[in-house]
Image (cartoon, rainbow, N blue to C red; front, side, top):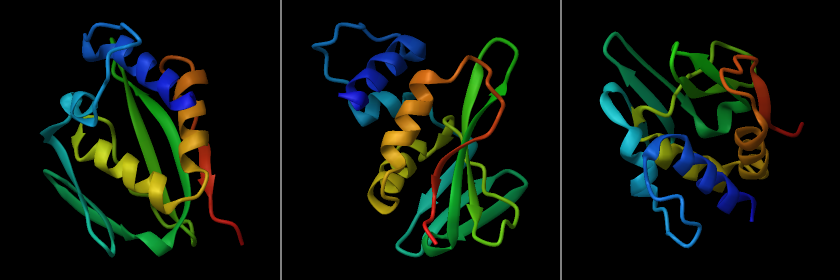
Length: 142
């Protein structure tokens, strides 16, 4: 139910698709915002890597200690971002919705991090436009 509301919100937000609730929105529809010029997110069995024109950074799945969600203000739109922090709080990996592979990353985090999907979807539905305040949407239990 929550995921359905999220999809409806996302559709209305910027995909310019018919907001008819009976329309099935696919991951391909969601991925239409992605563009490799904004960076590429690569997933493997070992972890996730983000490649941007000047930076390549990655983190192993088991090293992820906390995930934050926040938005960057791009003047006329906001950019949904995730911050993947390691357990030792080293600098985080920052994938965003316009990077190629974001929807695949989202789906992989749903599988690997118990409870991530519910908290992330809730944040997407409740956060205000241009909300730059990082919000923890998943934390490893210790």
